[in-house]
Length: 102
Ligand code: TYC
Image (cartoon, rainbow, N blue to C red; front, side, top):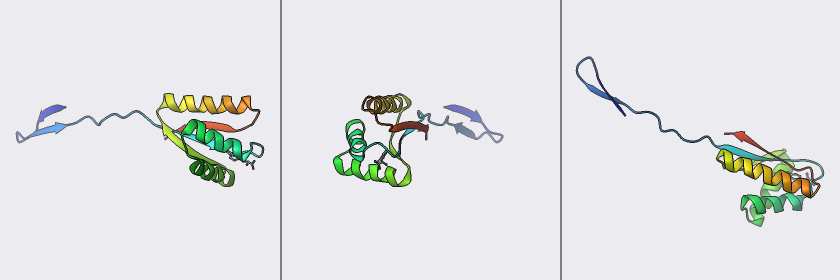
């Protein structure tokens, strides 16, 4: 906060804009090989969705190519992406998960 004196002696205040940390969208991408049930399981396990929500988002990805599955701080988004990529690789599915600054 900063006080200044205007021409006619009028006090004005300039406030620094509140700084918020940037947020990152986590996206799941469609592919032709990952089983639908596996994607549903990933959404339940790593994004806390119930079965209905997870199924709905999975179908959106299947039909449209991708979907945002959550918005997080950089550190949390990075962890989610790493968890999904690692889990998919261990199960030998090509499912891709990426992040993008909002
Ligand atoms: N397209 C896949 C199939 O037909 C299903 C799928 C959905 C794969 C969402 C990835 O992110 C995905 N088996």
